[in-house]
Image 1: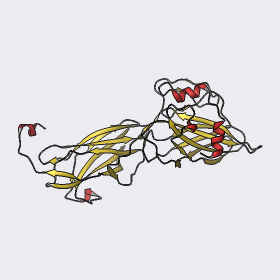
Image 2: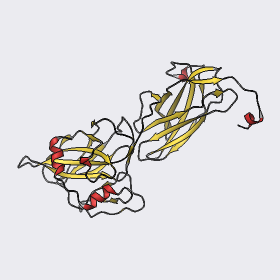
Image 3: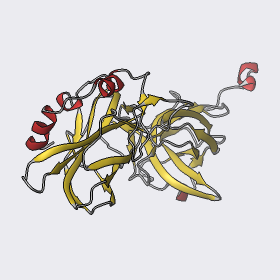
Image 4: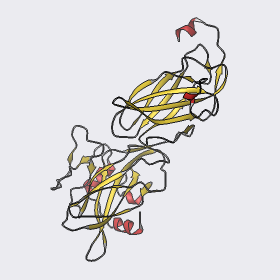
Length: 319
């Protein structure tokens, strides 16, 4: 945030209703975006996670119409974040906008930011609507936890040249920052909203035994998603294990991911390679209509062992 923006915000007094909305995570109020700007009313029937929370006092000339982001952020990464603004006046306005990530209970988030975007300057025509990306941040990461994301707009007075607060609002849903999966080596991801969060393999794969690999998938979007996951055991250095005939593939598991959450699935490799040490990789596709689109691939940070077959017993057969 620029020094000018911080100075303007320092002079901003948040109304009790907005302060309460920031402080009480479970007792939010949702203000519908309309020309009348009605006073907040209790949410009913589970609000959209991106509904805007603001107090009932009229905002300035340029207002926040909507905002989008991922609801699960991985430490060290920020999903695409956009804010849409609307100019209610009859003149062109010069403004800037940015967001602040702060603890969910913060009454004045600009005083305790954990992450914030650099202000994006823009000029908007009278009665116009503009959607702006706001992805540049300082610092680049936040500790795992639950936070509230707010968006801010300041505009310049064309007569005096002074900058003033125009609007401030937060999204209804909390942002969850989850730990980075440091035990995984990811290939360049095809999606910033869905990723492999973690993978857990047994201490040793045993030939003739059904050993499961637990795969945790993160959905950072506000919508449920359908995905497919599977894994390979392959020789070290196989960047495309599906092209190596010696690689062994698991069955494909389909999963329906809840919005803004983590889902764990279990996959089994029916045929194991000969005893030895191998790399385990996990692959994730998103299902859209009749298309399956790659979204992530990752390797376990350490190699895994395949052991020799053990004599069949009743316990083995029962697995």
